[in-house]
Amino acid sequence: MSEQPDPFDEIVDAETDRDPDLAVIEAGSRTLRAQAGPPQGDPVPARPADPEVDKALREVEAELATRWGETKLEPSVTRIKALMDVLGEPQRAYPSIHITGTNGKTSTARMIEALLGAFELRTGRYTSPHVQSITERISLDGATVDAERFIETYHDIKPYVEMVDSSQDYRLSFFEVLTGMAYAAFADAPVDAAVVEVGMGGSWDATNVIDAAVAVVTPIDLDHTDRLGDTPSEIAGEKAGVIKEGATVILAQQPVDAAQVLLKKAVEADATVAREGMEFGVLSREVAVGGQLLTLRGLGGEYSDVFLPLYGAHQAHNAAVALAAVEAFFGIGAGQARALDVDVIRRAFASVASPGRLEVVRRSPTVVLDAAHNPAGARAAAEGIQESFDFSRLIGVVGTSGDKDVKGLLEAFEPILAEVVITQNSTHRAMDADALAAIAVEVFGDERVVVEPRLDDALEAAITLAEEESEFAGAGVLVTGSVITVGEARLLLGKG
Image (tube, rainbow, N blue to C red; front, side, top):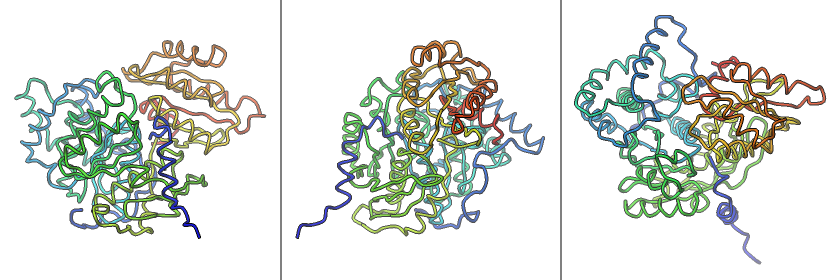
């Protein structure tokens, strides 16, 4: 009698053959979580209701805005190391999981946060950019810090920030100050574990003053090529900087040349490596109401009937990566092959939310928001929409930043969009609507492109187009192109 094939062998083959460009993609003491159960309601906070608190938060935002923005960088960790030194090295007060990659970092961070919290660890999560509120970037116990705590943390470290400013060639940047705030807030809480997403790259990213026991690399693709390199291998070289001596490295499916760079760095750092499709992965997935049902293979065993309330194959792969990262955090896989409690895993994944990632914010017509801002992200979003939504006609609302591969993004969405409304968000980084429209005409043709520079007008135009003819009762709207565009649309549509 022949042996039955191991189902994991099948996913090894599937993962190896899968086009990496399409695979894009949140133990210390067991202090009980400060709040019972997962956060309820909208995970994106609104402006503070108290006028005085709102005024104080706006003052902090205004002060931070005087610093170098996130797109202006002097690649060095000198300033952030100086800040950590005067703050007493808060980043060393807790173990960390450090996440880099091109797409899927924030969703993966949110999943890791939910899993750790479900095992009764106090968590801190630092992610970027924010969808609507700057306070989203710092989370404690699975919930965004409130405005009062954000303001207090800023004022607590402000004297130290000014001290470092005066001693350096350049002032601390916006992102460096926020990173200092996050690390200080986590130490003050105190947290049992920090889940930290890089801002850009890895080696010289401001977050890279932690010595994370677990380093996660989500799939690498081309983005920020002016700063990180023109090829996946060059970009991987920068991102490999998060791999520290003796760490465990969780690798999502990667382009071959990127994987080679990451594995070489892991060998140099004497790090343990777990690869998606080899040591862990997605055994099976099926579309379910409100998300998908997964069977995951972790480092310590199989986890079946896991409901994930997010859409798209890329989110299933993010879930596999998150699970492996948490298992590694608990020491599973390094000679300890035991599974975590599957009921706890199921509960954690069922609580996950990832705002602005194939997020439905309205019905009749259905309006979906997705923060895809590069071709790889756009391809993943397009596949997720085709799989999970039965639109008879889909209208796109697209507003991008000026430093992205806009044509590649539009080409990825072209097959699923009947028409596209070109617009721009309110920031200085936004690509001019007319310039974006010229590229859109090349991709879609003149008859399928509408231009509405104001986002509110663009949303109205897209919803009108979706409702235009009664035969298109299943029409919908997709808002995409930038986290900023999605955040502003979310507010205009009554969320937050």
